[in-house]
Length: 70
Length: 533
Image 1 (cartoon, rainbow over the protein chains, first blue to last red):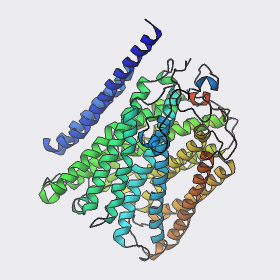
Image 2 (image 1 turned 180 degrees about the vertical axis):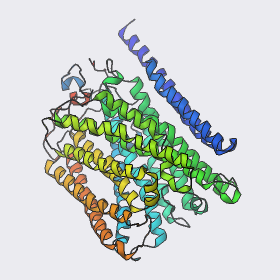
Image 3 (image 1 turned 90 degrees about the horizontal axis):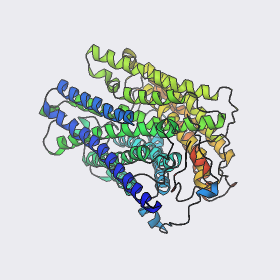
């Protein structure tokens, strides 16, 4: 493989990785946006707070766990 | 560790400013995808908004110069307090932090640009229309939003069209922040130079990585809250409208679930800047790098768990009050770790006190004071007494102005030589520091006394007993405002190249990657990643 081909392959790999990371982060943002409104329809405050709380813990687990894997 | 061992590369080897040009004139700035151009746009925009918000602050202080109503109508006064808060937070401090991130993060991690260069352009260009919406709201029927930057219902449900414009502006600014944050996280995670492991990154990059995660988590919550507010106002829902069975206190919970992490969103990048400046001018590595990283993460995690300390007076169960009181106090632990490490970094260092160091030390002193008054306010029974008084105003201005703003001033003077290729005028920098330091304290220290004496915030008139300290605070505010013109003068001088030419590494203690580049930094840098050992 020539240096130019390797460079192009690396560039493409980085672009795919960027897109994947960006989409994951955008999905997290979307979940928080929709989630905070959806919990208002679910029921009482305790239910809403539980749903939001679990979302936060999941978010932290994903955010921190992703870096542990690296 | 702040010391990044890397293969030193002679500046000319990075001089890659030859292959790609940029559009000329105004189109360069509108269409640019270059992180340095966009960083410059963010920083200039935030400086402009700093003065717009500052003029609003001076209007407030002019009205409060003496008791009675003399300068503006009470309704306009309320709009001033509301818009001052919104513009300073969303228009000045946050864009300034993103400006620093745009300029510095790619250069500090050895990346050629941000991961999503076009989205970066879009993130910035969403901001001017949002601010224009906020400013236009002054001229619509009912005037601008006047219920405070917290937009609490029922006032925000009942307010006029200005509130709709404010809600849309918050949506746009929120979208801009989320896109900027996604860009920063992706850049840091995917575009670091070979050998630049996470635990070798400069602290500024770490603090921004954590800040960006916070932003991604909480900005959508604010967007959700104001969306519900909008549907309450126009689509017959009753999320917060008590008349329809809604709960106004619910808005406070949701708002502060965003609002408290937002405080750390505003301060963590400032921590990062100070963590770069103090070691440089102490000529020592940052003390306790790993503990600084963990403390930053600890602060971020705890920031999700303390929101209700902003609303101790709404009538929560005692268990709730105790929980939020203790968790709030717990934040003092990681914050204390940071303050200890900064002091230990300076300890026995060969310190010199150029303008960036002066602002960093000023930050350390005043932010710690703001932190202590935060601890006072964390104590529930005390907070119930001091809630919505000028003590709270003093507290958060010690954190936001002497915290974030002083750190940004430190960062601006620190990196201006790299950005412009010209050394700033040290005399002006020092005058700017001392003017800011003295007048800041003249403005905000008396507010502690006013708050303890019971003066409520967000009022255009007050009892005679508060007159003396208000007069002093107003004099200080005008002094502080005019001191900031020195910053503008220093920046203009640098941009015009009026000063000593900066070397690639003007600060002998600077050890991060940007100092291996020539000054000013070339338009394109690190197209070939540097090798970091």
